[in-house]
Image (cartoon, rainbow, N blue to C red; front, top):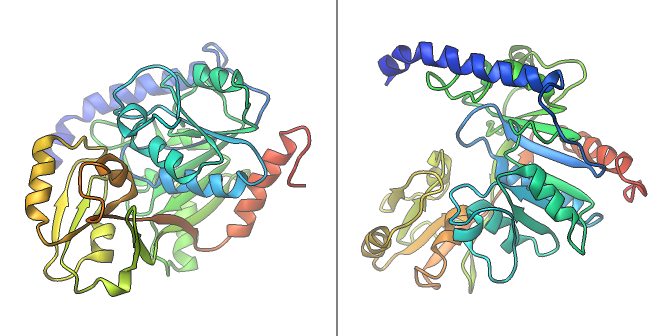
Length: 344
């Protein structure tokens, strides 16, 4: 794999040149970016792969939805539908995509929409009878046709964008200079005891500008697992026979949090669509076991695995320090971008 990536170096240079030209054209206004009057927060990354966008979007939903009409807008990755869709009681993971459907099932007081064309998606949301007051754009950092009012850039502690390279040699979707568009940079999936000295070192390596804020978060796992019918404490299931199942980008920490000596682990690609063969394989390997999966996988397995056997483990994004400052930054942006500033 290392040799292959070295061979692909010329293609990475070409890809980087193309994305740099595209960004230059948007920065100079030669390619048009559209703005909207309501506050729009875009959450994304420079790289492909899991940086923790879903728990960060959920953090923002919890922060804002009690005081504002919040909508999320995603492209609906790997969904079996096209165009604009607004989630309703008939929706499922296949038509919305797993992450938007997860938002819809967890947060009943928000609007959840999908559209690969974000400008059209925003216009459709604003044409609804109940208009959103804040829109959260999921995985839209490179979607330059819409200019959000606030950008949150995520980078994983184990794969900082400053140490990465352009596709296909590395994992970057655009060059590191794209980080300058961010209002806030968050280093995700950090050790919970990350020393301040290392935090400062990372800040220097990322070249955080004076007008940007930097935060560090880790993944906080719930103390309970949940099914449709019950909740069980994680500390009480250590000796329970389990099948642990994950179809996410980097599942190692999920497995490590739950796994006991005799547990079976099944790993699938990120956003995997489970075939009938997959379901049969899961059922065969989970005889006399409970199945614990991620929230994202749970919404795709619900109804295909017996409800009393299928559980999920929720996660949250947790700030190491600076949680109050981050909340204040977001609230101030939203409050000053709306007419009434409800949180002031």
